[in-house]
Image 1 (cartoon, rainbow, N blue to C red):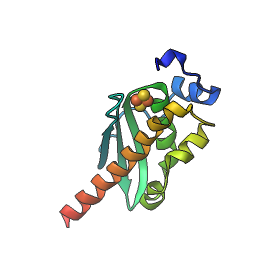
Image 2 (cartoon, rainbow, N blue to C red):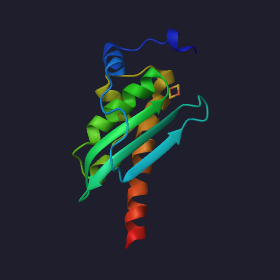
Image 3 (cartoon, helix red, strand yellow):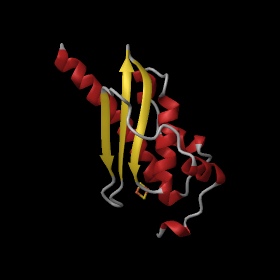
Length: 131
Ligand code: FES
């Protein structure tokens, strides 16, 4: 369905128009990139993790309004959290924070959850490789 026919709630539109945590974390030590095969959209999350705590997280999203709003919200929800807490973040929690997404846009929020998991995996692999 073309983007212009999708009705987003006010909260999603507000976050989409003023996204937080956009870009790339300087000196990041965790990076995760995921793509959606169906729509072709891509999301990348970078983080700076120190002593198991996510000190900073930023995103770059080449995707729809729901993907931008989800990544902005998800990065905001994991900053200051431990790796374990961040791994528990689900797209359902992101959707709740956004006060809902249209059914055909649920998959966009999964990108954020997946990108966070991949970034943490990347960090843990690098930590193990350095041992
Ligand atoms: Fe592709 Fe939303 S339509 S992420």
